[in-house]
Figure 1 (tube, rainbow, N blue to C red):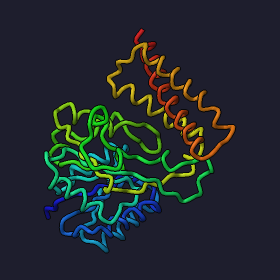
Figure 2: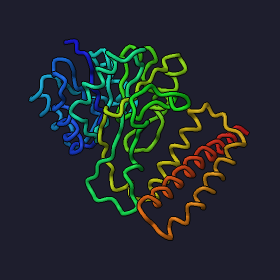
Figure 3: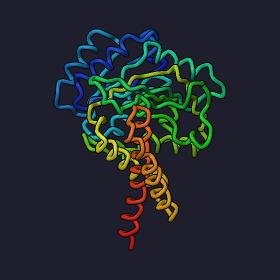
Length: 308
């Protein structure tokens, strides 16, 4: 049966989180006859299959597919290939969608002009454990502001985070979907498949990325992200991926960016004297920016050494 929008949930060994995500999709205000929910199981070894089968029995628009080739990009590509909807929306398996999430995505594609080549919205954090005093919601919020609009340069080429993004299916097919050179493989951290796709999309002239803050999901924030060490590592790995996203053209300016970021970090050190939540959030942001730039520079240095 042809539907207007296909919602893709890629999952790997997260049965308990997945159940909450699927429940939020089952409660969508958009009529079930207009949408399908496709779960792509990336060869899980936990109770994922049992969880999904329960929803498939209860709701006629739920389907599950097993993708044995490990990797988030591989699972996402399997999703759009199986989709029957004119539009394809992605949500992470640890997210909760607002009840009108799918309806607002569909109306954006149908009503906004020029017709968007991508639609995205806000991502807010949700907690299953109490964050430390220094932790601010802004650290895990993904937003392009409070007003609905098309993204403009330079933000447009980076698009939206993968937990809340949607595309016309024919564009996914035209560009061959997500690059398998980026993205999570099993539990191994590797970033950038979303950004790489948006960069390719913009480069081909399909740069109309529509942002609406009311298209909202809440993203699980694990306790690991309450650790400065883990936040440093995640930002560093993002920087490593960023080097390759920018085609490897890294020059001397990168070292200046690293030093500048660490200088800002040192300036923010005064926050430790009076560690309010806001000041600590500023300090953590400084650490993450410095870590990101360090990742870019180190990856460029290692690559150049290999070429020598």
